[in-house]
Length: 630
Image (cartoon, rainbow, N blue to C red; front, side):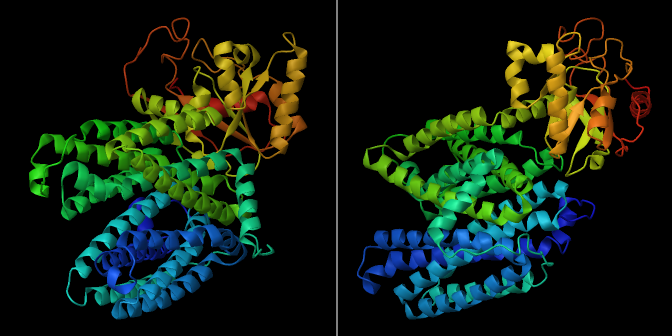
């Protein structure tokens, strides 16, 4: 991971550690879609004279050939990306892409369909080996608080490249009689541009240089999937991304028939609606980056799920029924009902950005560096599998008489079911969503000094305790998971027990209340710290009822005496007097006591050595951080 300070999005794109990779992957996605769409247009009008096969059959064959390498070679691609320098591998792959583009140009010039299909398979192979590299290299070159921005740029550029490549293919293929040759030459030029860009990508040393590369695709694929399954959060993130590709692939493949058979539109309308959808995804990716506050905010993922379901269902409601009347783009745009359809497509795209960008960043952040490329390779395999299942589902639904809008509705309902299932297994997503909404609506939170929280290794987090949601606020701002120590009486309450178990809190009781719980708590704290985790405590022992910082308890000495780790002091400002504080009596009795958008602050100090650190000395540090603002 880069040790440089973080940059803004506009600065990041100009940095050598990101800009060349961004341009390289844009050229690759652009080339894939330029060639694929040019080939589809070619076979749609000439396949009968070239192969004697139906155009629809050739289109399906082309789609299968492009996706087949993801199943056969993704596992090997992940191994190579972990074993060798990623920048060097990218240069080799992009050099090969130039050769593939030359083959494609010759195929276009001679109208040789078999050669074109072979080039398509090789482009799929190129994308298979490039995929793990472009995602696993980001954490090596970007600072942790730049990961979301980097993924947002990559996701946005990919979908914009898909649209641009598709548009250029249509434009070039309309030029008679040499449009296909122009498309091939364009592929060569774009491949050369991508290669020149990748030469400026900084070195990315191998994460697992001693890894033995297995050439058996079946056993290695299964091994990679098991590798992902070991990490519960990463596995469910991969499954979430794969589900989005099921959802998105279904919408993309049904665009043309939806416009033709439901809306009565023409090819120009297909392009316009596809562009609307892709612009929505790009917008969602950038909004995700802005709303995340420079860290991986998985709380946005449930919002993405909700958007995908609501917009998909509304698209069904907004779609006209009955026999469609022919309509051009201008006439379509003149009807108010049409703007509802366009709004649904934008919302689906935005929700998709909210859904996928944090998940990609989460996979990169929580995967072991020596396994990251293989994890991403497994993600690519599952993505491809879900896309194939999506095509099969659409074909089955259509064969049983469902209309395209009804398929959209069925997919939206399935999305809701998948979301409920995933968030039931990993409630962290939903909890972070609720906290994020709370912080963005009720409070205006400013954080200072978060860079002092170590990115790896054990540390003890200590903070004052002015309200009942202090742990949630701190957890929402920290990139790493924190094991909070919770009061046993609160932990045992039926309404709260599920929440505390979900965040893996450690229950603690006073010796006079339950000595066995106290001993177990110290054991769990020591085990967590020895495992390199962050543990959070409120040394006051209870939520203040005066607004002052109460004296810190002596349990701090027992924790540090058993497991000496750095201590990170924090202070919350502005929470006293809020709905969740005990000002003027019991908390949570007067909703919106101070209205909305109240300013609060979290101030973090540099870690303090545990040697000879007393509770009173730590109290003074936290008191100094908080100052006079309660």
